[in-house]
Image (cartoon, rainbow, N blue to C red; front, side, top):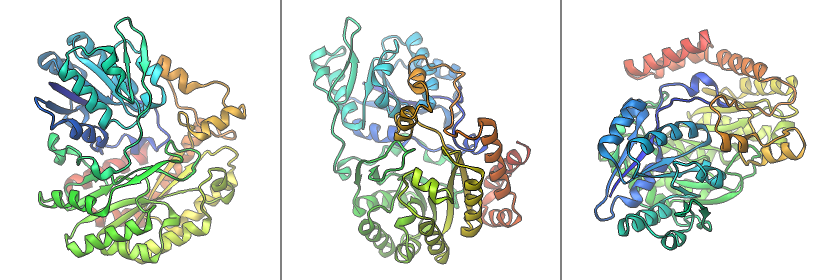
Length: 474
């Protein structure tokens, strides 16, 4: 059975909450979701599975059409986010036209949030709701047994959406999350050329992304992971993946978890394992500020952690409380002080345009940035994302007068623009502030000098210089 798991080319661009020039940078990371799904099925008998990443391989829509016409796979799968929905649809239309017998499956966050609306697309045969490894494996199994499986066989697959022979859409009962992540096979990096992926702020030639946990127990109102079941891989299991890559000459890793340090005991055990193994690797993580102190910072640094990405969000306690971050300004200052003490780079994620946020609140944020002295800064604009608590709250309060994300899920208009949450500033004002904040930070001579001194090789220097020029003349 021939299966292509596909990352579509970036044809349509929906403006994000992130700084646009950084979002459009040439940094391309592997889709770990697809690599995990591929790993779940690649060992099945008679399986020919490939990862088609149009962006890393520079494939156009015309290239994709030639590929699917020639190869005519049995099934094509996409990891679909709301922001790449239009691109997935473009490729799906091509597949339906040039290889009509190919089954098309949409998985990921978008079909999980909008299952009926996604399955209603005429070219989508299946959707996977929730975590995809086990559901997709069972779907492939019934297709191996029968080219056109009966409705009864599909009905037994939890987490699957499908269409009956008469066109009726069926969404099966949901599947429980994977409780023991150690039971999952390691992502199928053997199906891609890992050397093609890039990280603008890396400190070596090749970086491998690792995911060590899923879900989050915290309450941040803007996040789609709010209070979802938190599960994590054991330190031994993570080390096994790192050792696999070290044997291939890789010495730098990006632990892609939203918050690697939630479980203090696991963090310390992992750091000790790395330190004792003497692998001489470097890695970077993301963390909440209230999960970092001198003991954790020391363990992280000794084991090779060179950068922490912190969700600072605001220098106003009023705004932090509105966002239900569960942290204080003192937590923020203490975390940065601790990381700096152990010579760990810090990146501060801040957010402007929160409902009720004033000029004074933004000034407090910029004052805090001066106090904590991050090495990197990422300024985003508060955006009510689909089905988040913030989106629901603003709808209840009448600030959002209609469900525009649902409208987009149904009508998928390419001209759609992401509305922001602020009630006091226009979208244009917020973009201007965002641009000014990023420029003021990165065009600081102190920051420029540090970046030059940390740059490795001509390729990274060129990428950083191009980013600087975009910021300067944006």
